[in-house]
Length: 441
Image (cartoon, rainbow, N blue to C red; front, side, top):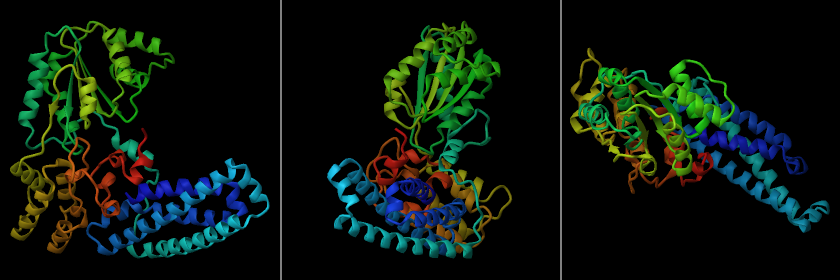
């Protein structure tokens, strides 16, 4: 979260530095110096976000950084507003050339505040050397995109508490719609971290599925629901080659060629699109292919609205893991097959698991984090982390980890890197100050 915030601030700072007003106000060089410091700090943030859950010193450092970033963001917002007034209001433009007292006062105040924030970030930059933080990838969007990409290979050979879910979905695919003349669409819906993709992989790789369908195709859609891109991915998945086609009509004909007369299972993983027109366009192209009976699209999504838009059959709603399955899953990652299960650690672990409210991703992440930790204090730190202070106040399919619905205190989220540590997308922050800047829609 801190990395995402800093990335936005750096972008705004660079934009401001290119504004002629930055030079006129005499802060151009200051913005360059500040941008350099922020970039250096940002390089180590992914390591810091991971370490802060077991280190109070790193956690405090991240809080200082987040607070300072919000102050700088406020300053840049004020500069942007003032710049807009000067650029679009003729009276103010003329005032600028005459050095109007209001502009002089604003320039003086901004210059002072920027110098103060530079010193603040300088101190934060110096303090980071105390923590031996390791630099990593710094492009938020690249990290986000790479994380969101999925493939059909099974990375979690043992799953807990999903046997019944898998059997019900297999029954639907192999029996309920096996003779359907129409293209069937079956959404799997559930909040982030419940294991929709993992479940879809288990179904996709099932022996019965491989025998029943002529073709199995996996496409990760994520934020960019683009018909051309999805059709291209379908063709590549089947033929192993990029079709290199530039028109939608040519792409449609190629898809018809590879799907015609075939019973196929197409998985569209991580769909966010609620636009009916976009979905109708893609569905129309697939229907034109005239596939064999039983052709089906399996969709995974966090949004009930997406399911309503796409479905031809009632959605399958994935639920949280039971208490017993949650504990078995946590033990698998925290203790492994050979590690001694100390009574004190087991007691704390069960309290941690209870706080994860059945989220497999949260359970796996925290279990893996504690796997090599034998110190009871470190386990206690995780249990008492401030991330648990964020509570659900309203429930929806897009809830954040640990069943978070509405964040009462946005800044406390910086104490736990939601995107990297629990694997949640930045789009989860809709409606919040930072989230509205990061969300692509």
